[in-house]
Amino acid sequence: MKRSTNPIFPGGIPGPVISLLVILLWGFISLTYGVANAQTKNLASNPHTNQDKLSLAAGLCVTRAQVLFQNGEVSHAISLLEEFKKKKAATHYYIHFLLGNYYLSLNQNQNAILCFQASVQQNPAFCAGWLNLAKSLYESGFFSRAGFAFENGYKTSEIPKPIHLYYAGICHFQADDPQKALAVFESFIQAHPDKICLEWKESLVNILFSLERYSQALPILEELAAKTRERKKKWQEILLYQYLNLKMEKKALAFTRFLTRTDPLEPKWWKALCQIHLNNNQLKQGVSALVIYGYLTPMTHEELMLAGDLYLGLEVPVKAVRFYQTAIKETWTPSQVLKISQACAMAHEPDKALAWIEKGLDIAKDIKLLRLKARILYRQKKYARAADAYECLVEALLTPPVGKPDPKTLGQAWLMLGYAALNQNPQDQDRLDRAHKAFSKAAAFKSQKKSTRAALGQIKIFEIHTIQQENTYAKKTIKK
Image (cartoon, rainbow, N blue to C red; front, side, top):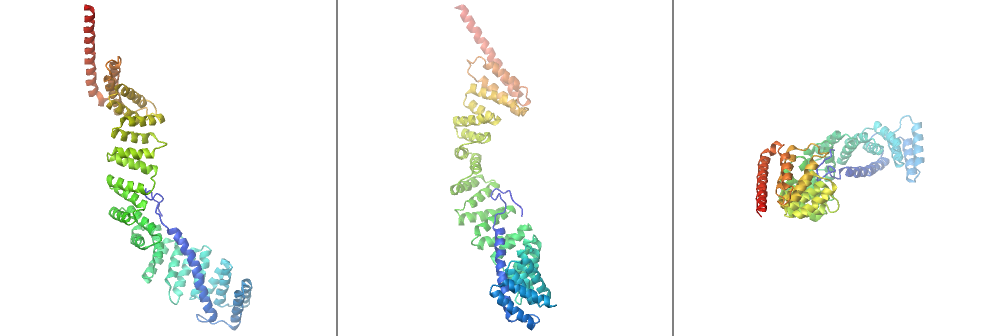
């Protein structure tokens, strides 16, 4: 069965199928032995009902052996029957069958298999022999042969019992032959359409899954999800997964809405509803479902970050900040710090954004954090600090591992450094030199030539104005 990377079901298709098969198979072992033993008792009282009657000597031997068996002397009963077999050239099929039962009671399965095989070889129409042969083969791990033995047990029964055909299908499945198992199940359904119970349909779903016939399994899954009791939620989960896996978005959405209405306290349905809405690019509905999910169960770090991302995408930065802060209480990465800093800036809390940026920069000189810091400072009209931040950004862009940055990014950084320096306090003596240098660097980039030409012209005007002011001041000083 294929596994999935679906975020709702990261471990693949959830379900109780494999464990269920094990339970069923253990159940049928004891049940089959009981059925076969009941038939054994009938044969003991009337051994010639199916074929040739026992000879007088054979009948006496069988009677003595059964007395020994009932008294707990199983080994003596086996020895008695084995001695009788050695003396007789042709042994009655019932002797082999009885001997097989005694070996089976001692868990000597290999000997039991040989005896049951001899029994059905002599009488191929002997149902009890086929059934106990199936049990012995299964317990010895010969699942395929056990499946065929169950099929023969079904065919030779006076009244064919569906359960024997069901066991045959399960054995073939255990033998890694799902195609044969499905063929047996299809024969079973055709012969006994009203006899297949929900528990058996669970096994049929598993067989279909192993053959990757997911669409064929869908109607059965829908019935199991609606009618089962103990494993109802598991089958609902599997059905929902199949809707998603088969790209049946409308059915998946309708079913998930049904689940959230009928079982509103189950977190996984709300998480599934969130994913379906997000797949349809319905961010508002998706985040609403995710928030309800968070009320029902503690959200993981990834889920909290997702909620923050969704609110940020919806331009609700205050709520985004709240989820981000919850997610990164103790440790954080530069990318996470960038998100919460952006949210703080959008929420008109620049100082809070800058505080987070500094925490991120303590970890690494992250390009995006440096750029955001410079932008925030520039918007706050803290031009000297903004110029320092842009200088740090340029330095980071030119330092390995960046090495060769995007020309547009580097040119923009030089340009904004020039503007920040130009807008510094006029009393700063080096502001024009700093701005001129930055604009000159920016001019080397094609994308910034037009802007830098205008900025450099503005610097010349400033310089001329400054010279005129200085000359005027000098003339006044001379007159005095």
